[in-house]
Image (cartoon, rainbow, N blue to C red; front, top):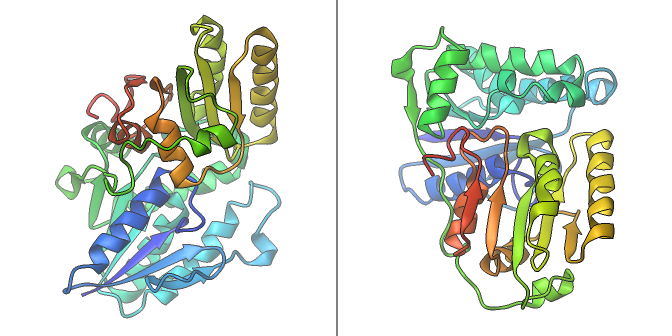
Length: 320
């Protein structure tokens, strides 16, 4: 059986939990003798033999009004065409859901869709996409209502799918939890990454790891940070801002906090996985203040590294 996996992210271009999930899923499926897996993703060519095609948006629609939302649609058209010959197509996130739907229509193959989040439950995306947010919602709704199977990453996410899209048959929505590779995420004793990032290995640390977006609750964490024991460091592994405005808000809040207490460390670039494992392994506590988190893969990563987790009771987090 030939499986076409459609994803915005694939290594080395991974910035969120969906990308990590697709990476692990593709690797695990490819290990099965009965499956021929081809990954189709955004961006530059990849060295992985699993990648069957990479795509950039059409230049005419790559930017401009709508936060470039038409760019992913242009990629979806090419993904749908490239999926010819596959026995099943599996899409991830709104960026590729429309591609999966079109492949289903064009080639008469089943479309499986994994819901990592739902656009209507992320209203702050309008700040990032403007009118493109209506495009992303349309792509998601069109695909999810017609998919042959919908995978929800938690029971809470399944409830959200059925409440948000009542036209979806509940029998087509199944829960399959995400996971992490324990050969990569496990406690380690090394501290060279901490030292390189200016973190004191001998001082307690409160750690946050996530994108700079309203969804992840980083502004709420920074507002609460003055109440954290001053003996502890606050380590913010926070990159990929949704907008310049929220990046500026975080920058101002970090500067204000740093003037009032020591031990504030902001790592604003993408963190190599090995560095993240070290930081999580030595965390006194990992905090996940998300406003919306259908699963919360980072919590699993933290716990796999032995870090105690304090998280908001939203989405799939209580199940984790």
